[in-house]
Length: 151
Image 1 (spheres, rainbow, N blue to C red):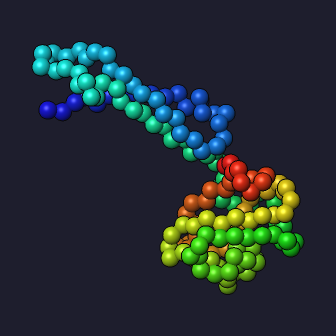
Image 2: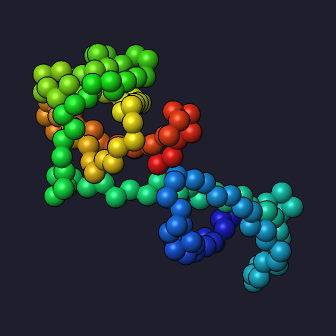
């Protein structure tokens, strides 16, 4: 015996003012069932169903060069940390050279760049060996104190 599909709709505009990645959870309670099958009853263990909605961080990134872009050439004092196991010197991330890199055996990894002071960024530039080595996904988080981060 199979159940009929239940469809719920969520108005996405409720997320419009939330920029960070977040999750919402709630329960849906089933109080009665209307059916022509007299043997159908509500299971006491399944009368309440948990629902989780995961909202991704707001992302306005796109490929290309912003019209107002200006590459930060003075990177003195920047502090770069990479996840353990990453191959290549952390400074390779900001040296501007095409012959240096960092990698983690075809896996994604985390790194932090402390710019030393607040800066307005209009984009990030990546150099890579070929399209197959280009980042497939980038999540940028910012922090004023290095402890609390937000997208």
